[in-house]
Length: 319
Image (cartoon, rainbow, N blue to C red; front, side, top):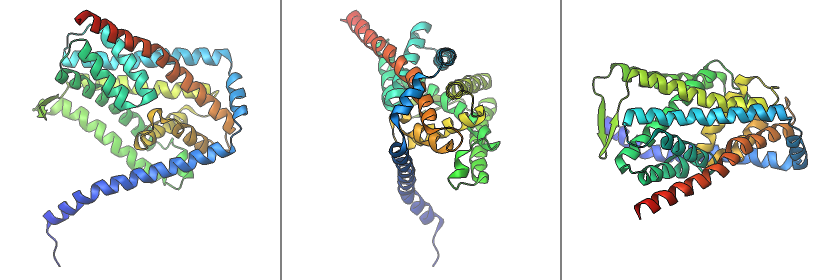
């Protein structure tokens, strides 16, 4: 029996959604088991006590890194302003970036990274197409940095968790090479492609210059690196920075696949499993709890009033 190439392609396309669902279910199952195991054996009083014992210098350094992290992420929005060339003032652009980022980290990318950002830009006078271009550019920039950074740490073998979960180092390195290949392809395309724009569903997709692509890469790499540095500092520097960063990068993908806003529970479970036997579980959780407070909850407390202020002021102005 001979099966045509067209039939094979048709069967492959039909099977792909099911394979993706199975992969997602597998990730959710693994994460669920890790969360259950972690929650059943942790003494949460010890976690709270360890959080209170984090010294003021560590908190001050971490707080400074939080400010640097948000400023770096906001600069991604500044780069998008240079490419899209919209009329919103620079300071308003940076405010939108910080507000949407804080909501994104706590409530998920659909609400913060996309929904809030689109709404605020529309309230500030931009049309839907321009706002969508900004969101697309910012998202691309953020994940471009992720690909460069995760690809590098996976290739050099700085990931302790997969070895304990039965995943070979060769597999991790292969994934790393794939991520680096995609990031490299983007930069090469920006440098060498003759066609600079495409239209997809009435939305224009523009290819940045090679210098902008390099700037995107640099800013996003710094942004992700700062996140890793905050956790590294809060862990009292007891775990090498490269390992902390690699685990955090792994957690980000797991949280997205599991559709859990902010990676709540996912990040904690993976860190505890990865660092088992090297640090007490309650100390790891204390560091991550403080990370959430400093990098997510406190900025959200500032972002929420800022969001409603923009809503009120723009509505009042147009009334």
